[in-house]
Length: 425
Image (cartoon, rainbow, N blue to C red; front, side, top):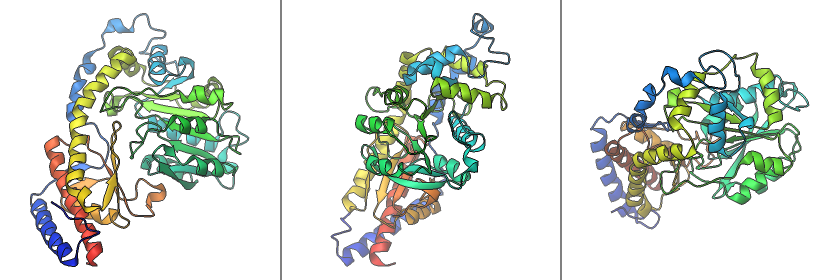
């Protein structure tokens, strides 16, 4: 049983350090090679949908709105639009169904805003002296990289238990140079926080100084509960429209954690006016996305009810893995007082906050013992965590037995990092 590091004497801390080092060295000697850097579905989850590979027949191509095997229908099959509109709660006319990557659609949206300007933009952003972007953090590293790659100034907005700090957001958007904000509204990456109804409505009702402000609403985990039943979530497009901001929001989702991550379908939802303008730019880039794959998803997923039933099967695989992570943290770390963590009920991550100054050292020790995790600082703009404390755990890919080993390595590594700090080693 670990001791509380805050109240322990120096002798107690030295004894604890010796025990932790002995355990760490034994684990390191096992030659582990485990990778928990990304939120990848595990093989068990991919096996759940193996029959999707053979679900299409020649008969399925008859009677469609358009021949899925041919060119055309830039914004996707109408059947696919109807499916994803039901899942997201918006209108089919507001949907664009893309390729396998929602991140690609997000990048493409920002790129078009930068090079050409989107619907009702005063001018493309490349003509501006400065573009600023709001980044709720801890957040998704790939989001931050997109806007950083265009040279935008990234501004950290603190996350709270109910979502981004809206007092801070509402103050920052008074600056016309602030052109957008990233949001993961349900089971946020990495905290697993679901924005409260009040936060969502405040976001929808924002009045930014910039007329070309983009609310980038990445609803990646919209139906991704692993504990309990599906939690309904209000449609952001409807809320923005009702608040007088119909063209402010671009929403994204994908089937990456529903079917095959490498062969899924992505979705963008925005106002019909926005979509009309977007199509004019998109026609230069692509003739059509993979409609055969879209049809495969329509036939396999069928509707929202059937898709939620599939997600229950995914939850059956994921729940024991998240339980393993949380049980190890409660057993090994909670008594020491050196960290706190979220207890998510959906999404793909567990977010741990150590005492200041421990994250980098913890992850260095973890990696040296054969367990690779998301790098320290990745959950903040520019990869810089001002407190060096946030760590993202991605439990989905390893087996439970592998995860047990990985968590032993992680917990003892964090203890050693904290003890080194306390003892000045």
